[in-house]
Image (cartoon, rainbow, N blue to C red; front, side, top):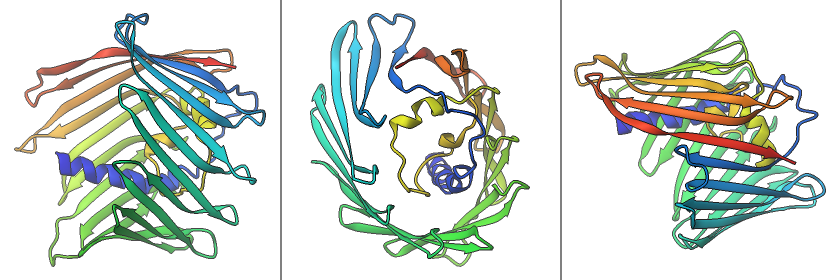
Length: 331
């Protein structure tokens, strides 16, 4: 299933441009900034946990995140991340430094033309890559080039009636094509197919998406040559989304094709179920996750408790995930 999952992940990246443009209908004018959150594995929050603290400038921009992980009450890992902005208040540099456990230093620099992102570079001792963006006159992305260790991969996008129609991914001698088969009534992608242009009769990969009225993806179905291989189903509440709490922590930049479907969720996910197929194309539940929430007076989550179970093809339990608890504090 590894190749299948990689296909799904990349298609999710493609769908992001549609669902991310959907305007959040929820009022966040009185929203406070997150000052910290604590992530606990298991039920003993005094010994095994991770904590992130967020520091802002007077303009409300995030300027530092401090992270610490403890096991049995002893600090095992620490890092900090500093954020810098240009005169247009756009993110210009991110520096991440590991100071305990794993020692490292990563730098990301962002470059703009007329306040539109045209390039960013990531450099560290183990990795050097960059993204270059070229736009059409109407502001839509025409081409993106990812250069990883001096090897380029090109993504070229085409539009019809102001909607994305297709794009091609060229990596060395190989080219894959992704085509939108249709949209739903709200203009969101309903079906995407992709195939290789290097073969005369290539296998066809198809992803089908269903949404609720708020644009949350409630079902994603992956097909290989017309046979369903994986189905993901999500259920959401009607409360204000957790990502609205953390969105001020991630300075907004113009990366229309970079992200995941999850960033567009307009409500909180209550459950997530993945149905897989075995070698005989028989369906079975591979994984099931559940989330429960506690909310503040504004309706935003202040505590998330997650449990999960994975299953074998015969339906027996393969693994039960330890309970994880995430709590948020505000300024």
